[in-house]
Amino acid sequence: MSQSQRRPRPSGGRQQSTKKNPANRSGTNNTRGRRPGGNKNRNDRDKNQPKARNRPDNLGGDHIEGRQAVRELLRAGKRRTQQVLISEDVHNTAILAEIADLCEERRVPLRQLSARKLEDYALTESHQGVIAQAESIRPVEIETLISGQSHKPPLVVALDGVTDPGNLGAILRTAEVAGVTGIVLPRHRAVRLTPAAVKAAAGAVEHLPIALVAGLPAVMKEMSDQGLWIVGLDGGSKESIYQMRVATEPLMVILGAEGEGLSHLTKKRCDQLVSIPQIGQLESLNVSNAAAITIYEIQRQREIDC
Image 1: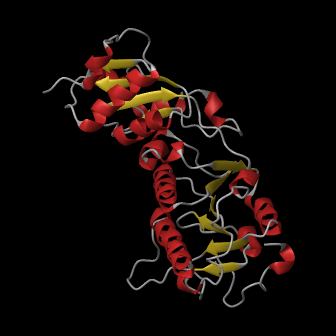
Image 2 (image 1 turned 60 degrees about the vertical axis):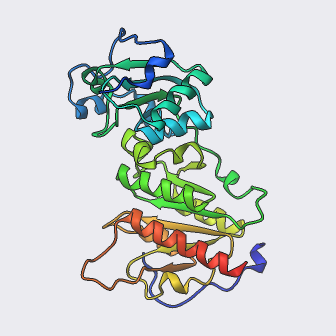
């Protein structure tokens, strides 16, 4: 859709914003080597992670915890995995057996550690007895999110000031399952793929393209010039997500942080601002819940339009 073909800018409303672990299959039970955590507490270890994770062009994602996230890392096979660590104390399950098989198939070192030693590596509160170390996830260029050959119009989700890793991970999981084209994260004032975010994403980071950008307003203009409508989710809007008139068009949806909402400049660049109807007494939804409702409403409208 060219710029000249775009519909008039929507109006109305203020702009707002006891069994052996399957690791035995690998034949390795080497617990030697320096442990990254030692006896330091989890907060200290998180502060002492390699500084490369904080580089402007680095998404992170090199430390993976949780059974689902580790299995999806190995299933996808898109980045090199240095090693997988499994606790001796976890019960054998189908997912752990699959992790062991995938490690053998992909020649990934699989080490079995005591629960105490595995805890030295852990950077989240619930690693489920499985931790992997892998290459960092590489961001994609923003242009690749709209240059696909799919017959469906692109649906890009951008996050404005979301700093909670649990929220980011939950949004990524929903976005991947719902068929979102890709995610846009700003380089500043936003969380990256920390261990907690990767665990909450439950493997979505292995499949969902993520772009890192210097600033959202400039990217919004670029996407608009490329024919995408820009819709912002803002609790003060008088128009609801059910009144979104461009859901079936190429679309970028902007979500702000809980409490903060969208920045002033981001709101100004939106073609339409919409809200989720609220019936109860609470002021707002968690941003990851709001994202799920909005994304699936867009997909619902697109299914009807087919």
